[in-house]
Image (cartoon, rainbow, N blue to C red; front, side, top):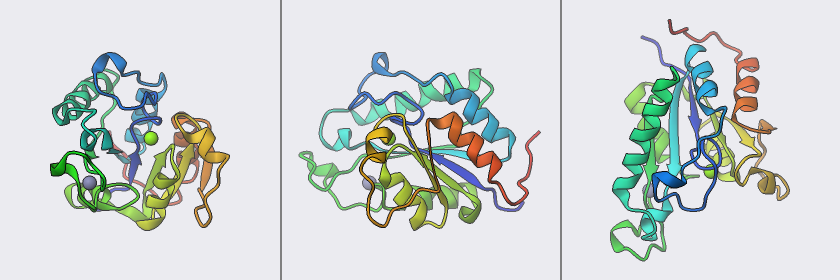
Length: 197
Ligand SMILES: [Mg+2]
Ligand SMILES: [Zn+2]
């Protein structure tokens, strides 16, 4: 088996409405296009991997087991729509966390590449043919750091991020939302990817 390209998706503000710290399912709203967008990526042969900073855990605002619970719930919603998320990775840390167990300068908090490196090993990915989609400059910065392409979406914090360009960080595309990002990615796939049947 050759290595697969992947699309790494930020969670809050990209797949889901940004609600501050998501701490219970009642506050979770999935964007209406998220399931269709992921299914299109599946069909185009991409692994789809969620990577999310969850500093709310480090801050004591989100219970760590809830993160897993939310991801199980979402996996069910995607499955019902015929879409598959191939991996879920989160970083519960923060360097200034009030909770000592989570207080660290970790390798996984975006824009550091730890979550992508783990997914690369777990799923045998080709990062040079991969993309990161998110609503923060740190998502684009992460794409750059691992040799992937970075797409900023205007949902979540994206519109305000777009108004505050970061020196040295250039997105490959800035688009309205995840579905527009998927359309952009499918147009910019330069190499053949294996198709799933
Ligand atoms: Mg986000
Ligand atoms: Zn971390």
